[in-house]
Image (cartoon, rainbow, N blue to C red; front, side, top):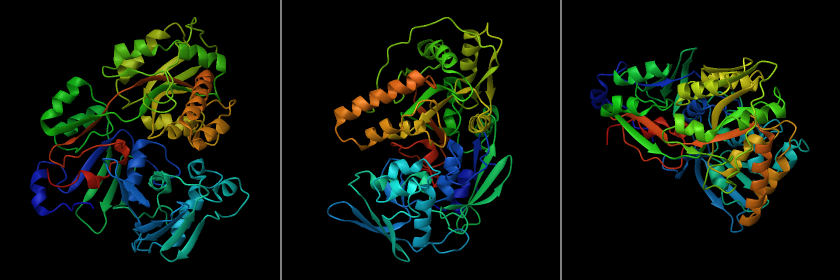
Length: 472
């Protein structure tokens, strides 16, 4: 439960610009609260707070009930019976089983890549292929009860129901949420969300450059720096008023190259000439070199032999590579790339707002960018290489869907590792992803707030309920 900010608590916020407002600086402002139309971390965080799922992940990684009041699992683990809480959407509409079933049908439609994770539900395969108009394994029992039938046991099934893409939607208005906060205002520079049934608790997402965010945090105008990567000196400058929690979450930083706009020969040439050892030693002080799609410790991690270096082949047409602001060490990375390819006047490297990267990639107007993918499982990493993926990162001429499905369905660890190695080799040979490094995540926020324990959860999935409240 969220802790309500009371008058007593205002004392600890009295020096802030907005006494009852939690102000979060962000490098860009999200334009969507639709769970199926967003891929970036700021939008996901907004959705995490505005919408509710059947189950939620606590900051330490524990699975909690969200909209589910109670549930039963049959002895053979093939039937799940859920009873839902009698709660209302922000509009005042009651949550019913119809909304649950609508959410599944919308989220697992043929136009979505999410169905791949839920093929153990009876009928999802046929529904996702357009062979059936509904999912036969999901049925309404009563106004607040739903039954889900599986075709085989899935030990991770309940955890999958915490997926942000399965945020429960109002059948009549997909933007109407069940979450702890409702959207009050969305503009180009800020978003205001308000705690349900509380007029005084407001959260404000404010667009800010890293320089502005750092100054605002020092001046006690901002409450956290979740979406900014600080160097050692910058951390020292705010350590007297901040909790700085460093932890490792599976996040692979890489160079991504667009197979729709660049031939394989050119992609390979660019990839082999970006030396990740060089880059890490020059720019990433706490980085670990990565040569695999998935980080070390995951099934499928495969340390690759260093590709044979070849002479830089300068392209004849313009190629633009973006480095998003807020990536961390972007100035150094930009300098490294410009120096590496300084004799190629057709290749440009530019630091840009992160939303320009997302927009450019989705609209197929971007040749490449430095970024990262983060996930909790190997399958989640591989999900970006399904041909139907919302944010496809693979080679349009290379189909890994069958291999990924085989990996997903196998239970023998040795066989899974063999398949994973094939996927890894395929993707890397396609040269749409050049793995670079992994590094720790710094969670930075005001020490006037609650200190939290962070487990296997990315910053984007940490709700305001975890940190707003009296200092512990």
